[in-house]
Image 1 (cartoon, rainbow, N blue to C red):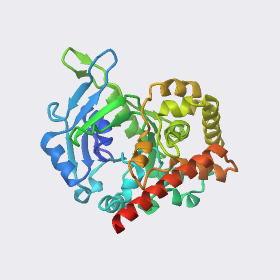
Image 2: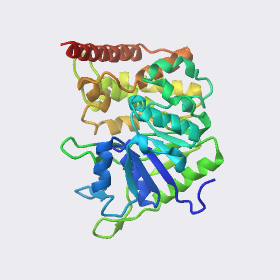
Image 3: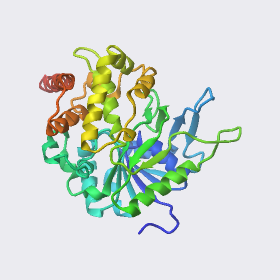
Image 4: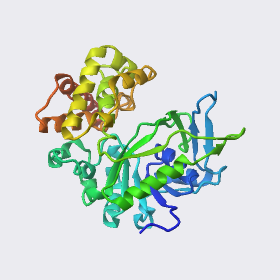
Length: 364
C-alpha cells in the first residue's frame, strides 16, 4: 500500500531528461532520486539541478534550481539503489541505455521488487506492448538493443507516457542543466491496477496545483502530467516520429524536421495516416491520435534535425529503432509502406557505416 500522506518516493532512471519530470514532482512535494553515472550524481548532490522552462509572454526562461528551492532531489549511481524503497519507477532514458553496466542489474532488481513503472520513452518497453492485444512481442525482440532487460517485469506494472516535451542538455553547460525547448505535456496511459492509476492521478493533480514565484508573483508552470484511460494515447508519437524525426536521416546528410515534413507534404500526410491506421487496427480511436494538420503546424517551428538524426550522424551505432518497431508491428497486421521500408533500410545502412567505422578505429 502507498503512504497515507500520498507523498511518494519516485526513482527516475536518467538524470538529463528525467530531471524535467523529477523537478515537477519535487515541486509538488514528492521525493525524487535520479539514477545516473557516479560523476553526474556527485555533481547533482553537490550543486543541485537546474531546469530552464520557457514561459509564455516572458522573454527569458524561468530557471528552477533544486538547491535554491529546497527541492527533495537526490542522485545516485545505479548500483547503490534499492527499488524496494520506492513507490514508482520512471524510465526516462533512451532504450539502448537500459542494457548498460549497472543499469541492467538495477532493472533486474526492479523486476523482483514489483514496483509500478512509468516509461517516458519513444520506444515502448516490451512489457507495455504485451498489454496490447494483437501484438506478438516475441517477434519484436530484435528491435531492441537488449530485450532481456525487460524480462521479469510484469506487463500490468508498466505504463507509457509520450515524451512530448522537448528538452536537451546544452553542450556548453554542466550535466546538471536541462533546457526545455517545447514545454508540452506528458500524456500517460493508465495502469492495469486502479490503485496504481490512482497514484498517477494524484501526481497529475499535485503537478497541476503547482504555483511558482518567478520574482514577480506566482505563476503556473508548463509541462503537466495528463492521465488517459486509453493505452494508445502515448503511441500517437509514432505518427510524428516516422513522418518527421526519422525522415531527418537522409542517405548522406541530416535535415531539419520541418524540411523532412514539408519537402513533400503529401507524402508526409500519407505516412502519417498510414501509421495512424496501424494504431487504429490495434485498437486506437481518432481521439487518441493527433490530427496531421495540427502536427504539421507544430513542425513549422522544428528547425533542427531530430535527436535520432544527430545521434546517427554523430557516429552512434545504437539508437532507438521506433522505425523498425513500427514496420515489424505493421507486418504482423499485414501492412507495409514503401517509404517506411526505405526509411528502415536507410537507417540500417547508416548504423552499419558507424559500426564499421568504429571497428576500423579499434583495429587501427
